[in-house]
Length: 163
Image (cartoon, rainbow, N blue to C red):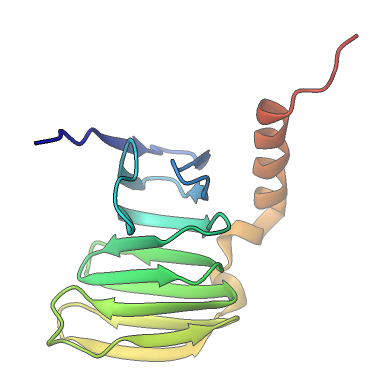
């Protein structure tokens, strides 16, 4: 029997960015936690989120994000997931399409949303609401945060030649 090593990343009081083993880029918002295997060994790349994160799946990634009672599957598209302590999960498709399903299949049938759409799931009363992504909810675009993080990350991955 093979042992699976799990990695837990917690962002504390500031956002952070990193790559998953399948090369998916993750922007973890502050006070959030993501747990994932050190190596993806099966076809599904399952990660567990507590808090909020923006995902840019790598080409060919088969990423599934578990948050509260929901499971989010990306079809090569960027998306944001926000799981709040009160059991509300907000899932936003940024570009492309994602599918949301309940961990317990009896709660709701899988739902697909596309670019600019959002699905809010209340895990307490098992209610789904579909809407457009509100501008105020786009934390990854506020104040150039995403650009700042991306530039910082690119400097680490691709340091300039200093000769």
